[in-house]
Image 1 (cartoon, rainbow, N blue to C red):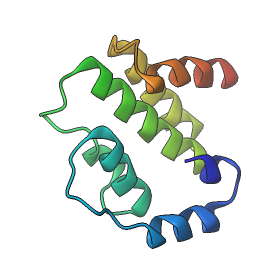
Image 2: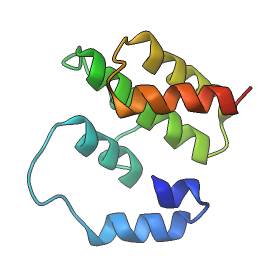
Image 3: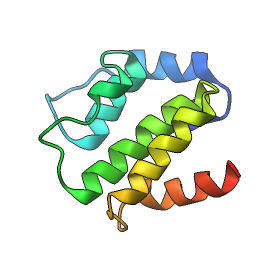
Image 4: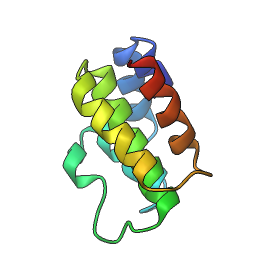
Length: 105
């Protein structure tokens, strides 16, 4: 995510390609990696099983960031707002969603 945000998308993709998942995982971080690898679409990141506030905040931030690096600030804003609606305030993604929404004003 950091490389993508820095405008270094080719390097970000190369890193993702060099580091395949070593274990099958379904946590929020693994799901975001699948999004950035192009293995799932943004509407498939959050599933019906993702009901916890922290998970929803984390995944919503990840999707918002994905849209942001692609230049779609409208979709990014919607996902950052979804993160905040989750009430998952302890999540890193919740905190960053607050920051991103301030930047997008």
